[in-house]
Length: 172
Image 1 (cartoon, rainbow, N blue to C red):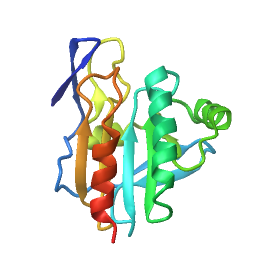
Image 2: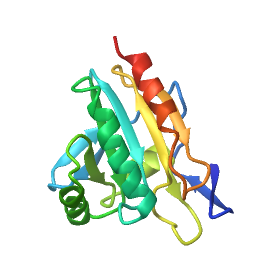
Image 3: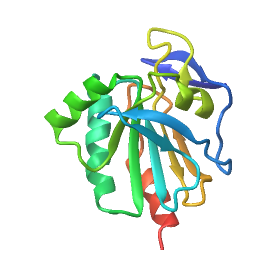
Image 4: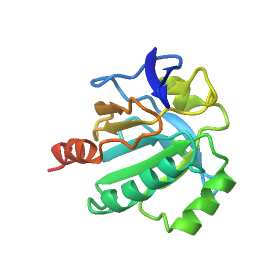
């Protein structure tokens, strides 16, 4: 179990397991904004950046998604970014259309919470209980977790430069 804070108050985060750096990234299916199934994790032959956020309807999550949309675009095809929340695909589609999100996939874990459970990022208590915590995983092309950033305060953005440095280390 992990612990983060929400506006300074401790909040437990967990799931069926807690994925750590060096672990194989579990393969799970999420639902894209276009209602298609997408498998994340596992060996894909490219770097995956898996970005868990509580909800696109919050200022910080929206800003984070926009920033990763811009920053990951610079890497092109060898890097695949996916922002995952519990938001319904319809809300994700509206958000992506309104904000011009085209370089990262926005997906939902609403159906069976497989991502949250298998990566250990479900908020277990407090007003955001059941949503995903703010956590970023970088998965290498062979499917191993090369980097993990648990943002200690849910209302704050991740350290983008650390994430991008982890991605750069995995590229030729």
